[in-house]
View 1 (cartoon, rainbow, N blue to C red):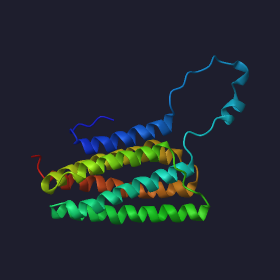
View 2 (spheres, one colour):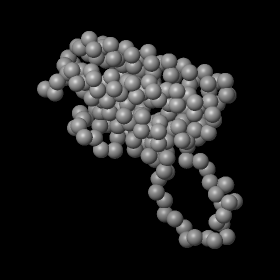
View 3 (cartoon, helix red, strand yellow):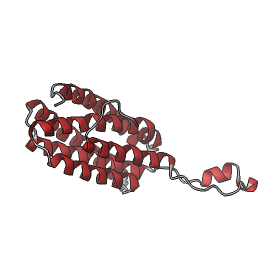
View 4 (tube, rainbow, N blue to C red):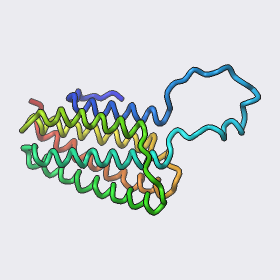
Length: 202
């Protein structure tokens, strides 16, 4: 994914992790293809292929992504200078926490254990690096870096929902949860852009 607005390093780290991780989940790593074996082709061979991403893995990705942004919101509540940024951060804590509670409750009802995977691990690693960068900033510089990250984050999550998570989910209730959460992410993106626009670029 390319961005038209140069992002600070914290936002780039996060979005690179999210987009690369979900691309790997959707497409899988490139492998050398063995010579074609006509006898192995056909419906039986197709049926034997494992899905690129499973519902337990999607559930873990969702919980991880929401937990990360909720934690970033908690950080912003303590470090931000702008009242608008603090308000936005509180919304992230509230809304992402609510989605996680729904996801956990659904997993328990379906007797599905969220499964850690390469994508969720990459998300957490990228978030840890982004948090380190944000923690080194304060005042107006923190506000700008945090809001830039939030714009890029929510755009990346919307892309992931549309291209990987919603199409890849097999359980109707999980798919419905993701579809129901999408409007909130879209609203967060628009609000993040609005708040970012009030902060200037210095």
